[in-house]
Structure formats: structure tokens, C-alpha cells
Length: 291
Image 1: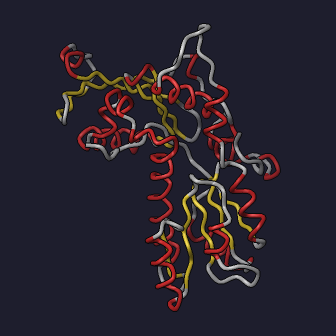
Image 2: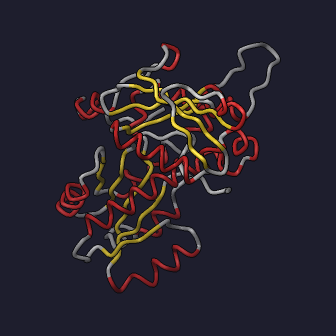
């Protein structure tokens, strides 16, 4: 019950690739077919880019102000306000969540580069050769890296795509440690329920949803597709679920849920920019890290 089945918020992020071979970087990134991405043949440049977002969410916390003087914000309110800050910033898509690093590079090996990083949130995948796998396993055991992939395997792009998708989910699970907070768990029970998660995934697949955010202290999720078209998923739990909406769906999981999807979102929940707009922008406008 303590492991989230879905993340409270999610949006597309940028993959970082670090390898001394330009040709290899291009072929791998192209094969993975997951935009946006940035590649670096100079390891320090990649590390510095990743570290720019090191205190992204901590900085967001410092920006939060309670609506009234002397009023404090609950953890739930802070999470939802951070979600608002992210969806009002088009550069959110440039935020690096997963970094793919070659182990064997002339100037530095990939593990030494990982040990020099100051970004505690970014997930790290080490590309290894057969001879380096024991080193990678040891690094995984001490949590210096989050995964490793043999760069010589035939299905490298497919394997990387799977690993990146898994680690991006973990990235949104781990930032701010929301999943370990009892106040958050009690407010967002549905995020820990596999029955609700199955329903949520069906909704996202049907409407091509790629980003979502919690609002109204857990009673709704904002959903957006790549073109910025929005929906509001209303969620009633327990006694509230006994007052069904005519177009709603009943879900019997750890709790009884009643959910219905509404086209559009309120003006106060507007999305600034959209994924398609970001991808179509000139590269120089997509280069900065989200802030």
C-alpha cells in the first residue's frame, strides 16, 4: 500500500546522453526514439547541465507563499502549488530526469562522473561492455547508478527505452519524497491503488495523455495531451462515492471510488505551452534547463 501505482504528477522530460562518440550518441538516441534529448561528448558539460536542475524542486518550495499572512501551507497544498508552477513553465520539458552515460571514455570513466554529480534526483544508466558488468553491478548495489545496459546487446535501443521509461516514473516518485509522507498518502489514496491505476492508464491511453497534475487537495487530476488539450478527472472516495455522477465510473479497489472525466480545465488550472509547441521551437529556445 506504500508503493505508488501512479505518480501524482508527470510530464515529458529530457534524456541526457554522455559518450565520447558523436556517431554512437546519435544512433542510440535516434533508436530510442524518445524526445526531447540532449547529447554531450564532453562529460563535464553533461554533468553541469544535469546539476543545473539539482535544486529545482527545493527552489520551488522557497517560492511558495501562503495565500494569507501567518498561514502555513500543508504538504498537500505545497505539492499542488509546485504542480501549478511546473505546468505554468514551458521549460519543464527540458528538465533532465534520466542520464545515459558510457562507462569507458578517454577523459573519465562513467562511474567517476556519476560520483561527481550533485543532482540527487536524476536517474543514471551506465552503458557497459561485457568486461565491465561486475563493476556496474557493484555500482548498482551502492546506488551510485540506477541501472546499467550492455551497449553491445542487439536490442540496445529497445532495452534502453524500457529502462528510461521505468526510471522516469521513479524520478517523479522520488522527487520531494511525497510517497513516504503519511499526510500525502492519506490524501491521495488512489495513487497507491492498483485498481484505480488500471482505470487511470486506460483513460490516459484513450485520450493520449502525456502529463497530469493533482488539484483540489486530491479530489481531481488535470490531464493534458501533447497539444495542450485538457481534461479534469474528478475522483470521489468513500462516502462521497455514494453520490454518483451520471457519467461516472465506479471502481472497487482498496477504497470505493467514483470517477468521471470532464472535457477542459478551469482557467485557474491553465497549462502554459504544450509538448508539441516545445518540440517545434528552435533548439536554442529549448536549451535551458527548466527553472
